[in-house]
Image 1 (tube, helix red, strand yellow):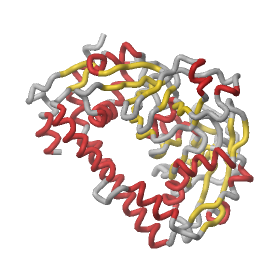
Image 2 (spheres, rainbow, N blue to C red):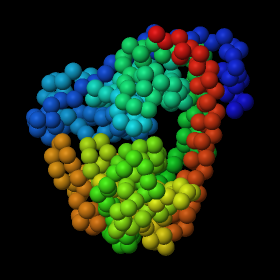
Image 3 (cartoon, one colour):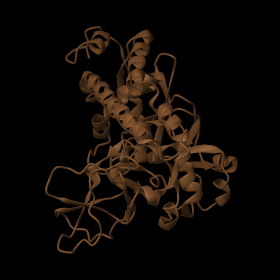
Image 4 (cartoon, helix red, strand yellow):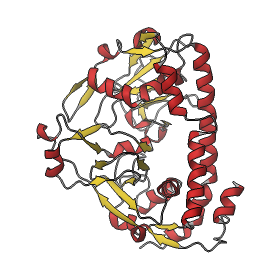
Length: 389
């Protein structure tokens, strides 16, 4: 924390008198568009990466869930977003609006995303972490924190950002990058190497004795039976702000969720395949999944939940799921439950798995530290945000 304060001043005041500029003064901002889904030729066998708003939760976008053809690209007003730009969700359900991500590849986006392409005065990682730490304020700028308000280009262009000299920004970016990777090395590379070096592959149903799709809920305003739905499942973990309630007078004849269950979204463009490890809150409520979410209970003597979840999250695994275990059209896709049970999952040795989970926990702690250290950036600019018309 002390190094951040030294670089940017205290939370209370800008002791170094760094300049403050609006995003529109140092970046090119533009929204995307969606080719018509009624034209298969705009989508089938496409090669151009096209990002939907829900994909901002990836944080670092190394690939997209959908691709469009050259014909589809020309048919819409979407534009190519260069690598190392920032994208911010200007609309979207749940926690999506106001969330930011970095493009790690060239891509185009839908109309619910705004691309921010900074000039040479701004380090993209610095800008990403700056905006990421201001999520609630960005939501507030849309005029409706809890509902379905929306940001727009004009609002985004007027957002003020404190801009230290580029050298200071680069120092900050280096610290943030190191925290993401953690002192334990390249986390993702370590995982991929561990998994792809094993010759022990088993079916999903053999490593998960319990695989269950949830109920069709009878929704009520409130009850002690809480329903985990697609909007609760994100790449970085569960988000219960969008949880729903089932009528507790109607018996639940499906399995109750337990901590350690791996939850997998089974349907929907932009949501199918998203997964996380469920952590049951310490309350007296009952938690169940709805019919659009598959709950996977692993045999922990064979594979740990965190290991399975991270494997399912890999780009290659996601591509396999979409390629082999999904049915439906562009407008509505679903995982075929009976088919995905047969998906082969690499199973490393338990010693490797335990070591990996320890690294995962330490990496999560490191990211938590960097997020706490960034809170003061949020405070520095709170007064400036209030000046936006």
